[in-house]
Length: 289
Image (cartoon, rainbow, N blue to C red; front, side, top):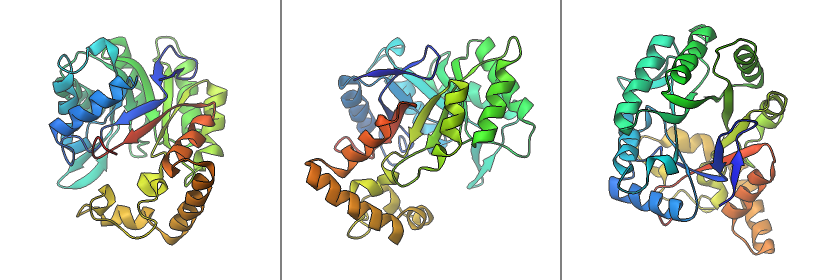
């Protein structure tokens, strides 16, 4: 699998990243190991997680695979901090104290002394951004993170943070921005991608197949054996499986058939054709997917 540099950094990522949001929650340890094995054997090197995925279980599963399924040095492990569940509600806290504590807990779960990429999960309007950026500096300067990045930031937020980190000595340079990007959601083309080009950082695209809509599996109904069919995620299904999106997916289905390929492959190829996208992150419930 082709490796691409994340912007102008030395971080090399496989074109396809493996998302682990369901690991330890909807995807058990054995199934996660099967996914990871198939992915690594295909040449993939990038596992993406976050501190709150499965209430930390995603990271625990990855940690259990180190040394048994792959060597630590052969895989790029990324995680994120700044979002957590409190009494069943998703809360944002990108304060310095919260971020630092979160990373140390992540390292314990991952059974490693460092992550290759540590990212602020989302912008926190309730805390000064200097707090969050100082946590990135701490992680980088103590060796807990080889590279640092941001996630789900707008264009101006990205430019602001990258500029602040670039203009001062001893600061951790931001290497990546992780954003949603697909044929169904091209919002980042207006500001985030131009900012990434100007700032020389890599774009990590998540949900490149539109949360599964661009596979065509929702074109003729809502199957219960999908992630969006899970009890409790009805709000996510209602947000993503809309008449407008299904109409676009059905048009793509015709185009893919004319080209002799699948909707998913065509959608991924479209994302990867953008030279500013370093990698696209795929999440699967099982190895067959």
